[in-house]
Length: 252
Image (tube, rainbow, N blue to C red):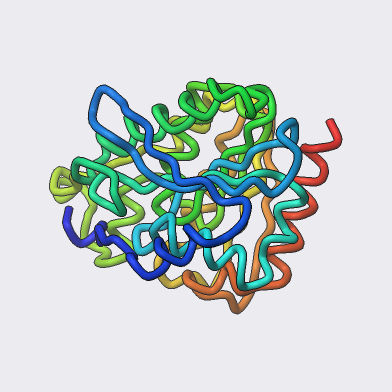
């Protein structure tokens, strides 16, 4: 499903990040190749670590640079931050698909959990847009300290129907990226923060609500108005909700 993915390498952001204090370039060897990305040492080594799974138009270098420069770093509440590039993005080998993103997500989490400067019991998973399915999948198979889902979809069918509302009945067989987050949610043992907008033109608000009802321990659903799909990071309200959730998780 090429229309779902836009693999790219942002050389300008990558080069700039290398000059920034506290940044560490990541390159993790896995059985499927090398996954690349960045870590920002924003707090103490014992501080919680936020593992961020990007949207389909993002890459690790550009997103990390925006966090540093656009005033959103405060919302991470003293946590360290790690962002990896999906297969085919940045310097990560391979190509993006449902299977490769699932493998990638687990590899990224496990690599961070094994680091000496990471407390494996204090990893918080944060997914945006297409990355919410990856985040939910990893959270269903691991035990993160927290989970943030921003503009999440219930499954890939909803995602495709957001582009063209035709994938129903027999047409569902055409959907190659199914990423059934609603099923993953049933195995998640923590209560996530869900950020969803009624004005999201890419991920239908009702899809986010359907997903929110699947978590066994419930969730905190924050409904937003007048925020488009690409506007979440620019919203002070969104950043405040993120900071509140991370502060609460950190205090446990």
